[in-house]
Length: 178
Image 1 (cartoon, rainbow, N blue to C red):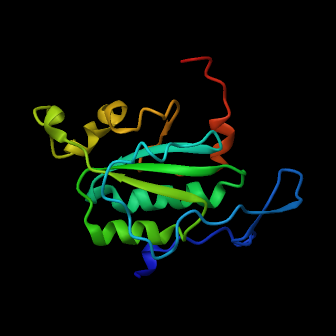
Image 2 (image 1 turned 180 degrees about the vertical axis):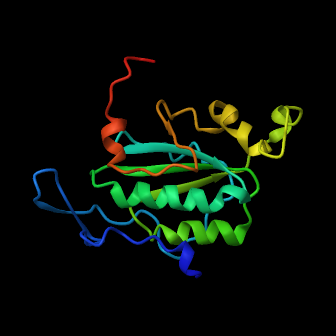
């Protein structure tokens, strides 16, 4: 793989262990996806609903933001030290298969399940596009129709951000039915 696609954990942490807030060590829960397993090309199956022990993350990207998506995902899994696993739904706005494999490979099979969703873009087809606004800008509008009905809560993360702390802290905020 090209060097740019590798996600390197913080040098202060072992890939199999992490530290709690008080500084003590704890072991990770293991790997959800075998390292050689190819990414799914379909919407997530309702027969495998997320459990209450998972954090649901949604992102959308096209080939132009693939490197940003890989970087955001790397920062997400590197800084996630909580016990919950991550269900990561990626709305595919035109990412090549080779790039998808590189993205998933860069996360190193950490405690994450990746679901690639190829949306029907006919509903956003006639929206205004510019050089800076590609169809991928509008993909988040389709999220309610793309996630399984069993998902009651999800965090949307843009492809151009870095996660600098454990996402579980944000996930645990009570939104009081909002």
